[in-house]
Amino acid sequence: RNPMESGTMRHLHALAARNSSVSTFNSTASTFSLVGLSGMGKTTALKSILRHYPQVIKHSRYNGRDFIHTQIVWLKLECPFDGSLNALCQSFFLAVDQALGDDTHARYYRNKRNIADLIPAMGQVAALYFVGALFIDETQHLREAKVTGKKSVLNFFFFFFNSIGVPVVFIGTKSMLEVFSAIVMTAR
Image 1 (cartoon, rainbow, N blue to C red):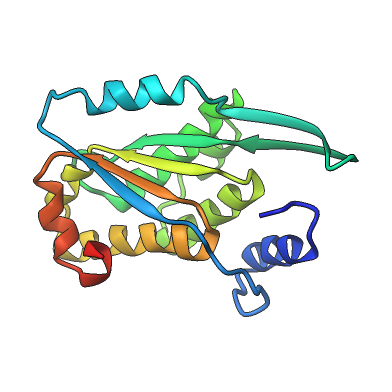
Image 2 (image 1 turned 90 degrees about the vertical axis):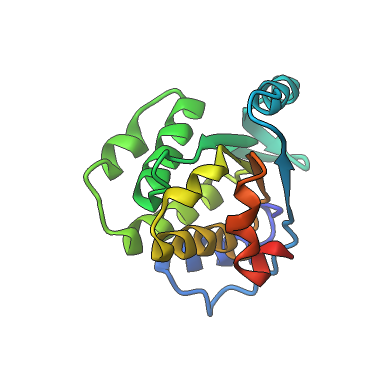
């Protein structure tokens, strides 16, 4: 996702226009899961690792050229206790704002309830800030979602690493595996 390449700019414009046919973006993002017993220290270990990386980088130059841009290196979200996709979307915008130190996105999307609008908006925000990785903690909560909700959330994750190119890391207990193994593509 080199910000100076024309393909990157075409991809950003395609996301903004919600026209994926314009973009020739090929995702190289991957995913993995961190699974362990409850209380084992998965979240503590993750926080310890993430402290070694800046969450936000404010660029002023890139490859010897002026480039004023804010990049979010990583975002960590908790899966909502009820597995709600809407709550997950709201959590994403809140995490973006916490990283940036403002409340612009959470305030703007707070009253938006249409998932069909929220998910592309998340993609636009993730692409705009060149989000490096998305960590989703407590993914075992997806078991609480309705059957259609589980599929929607899993499709949302695929959208993120296939269409946007953001690697997604799932953290949770062993019970999250039954949710993910229900769909062959996810289990893979």
